[in-house]
Image 1: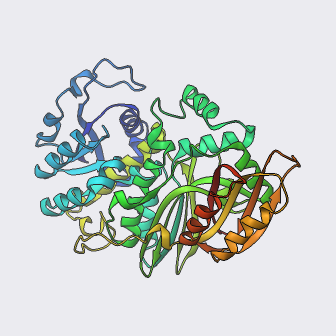
Image 2: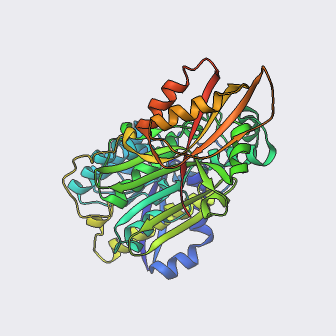
Length: 436
Ligand code: HSE
């Protein structure tokens, strides 16, 4: 039986999962591949760390370049994360004609063009199934399963930490900070949670989905990104009354004027598939012109789900090595290489959607009329309104759901409304996506 050696750089949680799944499922993987995958060398800076798998000490080195320079290793797995050392190692591995498997979404989002060009120049493959939505095989599904489709839109719950926090806030009616602290204690959120809760991690993954779906790279810095820090139990509860859940969605749409790419909290109608995705789960709802809407659902993080995705790439590349073939030309972008100019993103001022608006107002006659007047003047049509409670001389929340309106018009209206003396505190607006 053929043996394909692999080198692992980074033996943390996911790296240990890769070793475990290759050990525990050795038989079935060999039956499928017709060859044996052998971990030949492992680089990690911490040799003493307690790991959930037994690893022979002789495999370890603290010098990742020993893995990259080992002539018997055709596939290098990068699992250290980050965008500096990891980039040097991946480019170094490619220069040494090694195929690369990585879970590093930040690196691909920020330096994808350089990495893919290097792969192309060196004639090696890069597998990155684990970079988006952990165990969900969304990369392969877009690349292979939807190959006959023009992809119209993608809506992803692709950050498990944020989804866990929003789900808990919704279940228990608790404030964001309180739930975040609990999530950190329970291991659902990092000590520094900002990449997750500020939407950046979801935006990294979205840029990879866009590359695969639309065959184009985009300027990561131009994706509109908002996180969940400002979501309150009050908004979750009003949204619920109107029949919606609040989810952090990563959204991409192929529009005639460019690509719409945005990450922000979004009202999603209850009873639609994404609204039911709770806890740390991920889901991607994707609409192709031929296939219609599909949804993929599963664990977007964790040792074994992510390892499952990493090993799927190793096996795919090993198959090509055995067959002396390369699926490179269709691998990174899922399109044949085009010139790598960046595609235009539709500016937020040009998008159109429905909105949830909440104003904290003085409770006296004429206030609602003033708000409605300003919305009307800016071409924004009201669908429904709730004003709760009666607090003469005090403040009450007024919540308005709009029909579809242009973001530019909403911004003009809010600028005007926020200047009214009867408006107290910050007005809230949350976009609504119609996924029924
Ligand atoms: N931190 C990510 C999440 C998982 O919360 O979904 C890894 O991408």
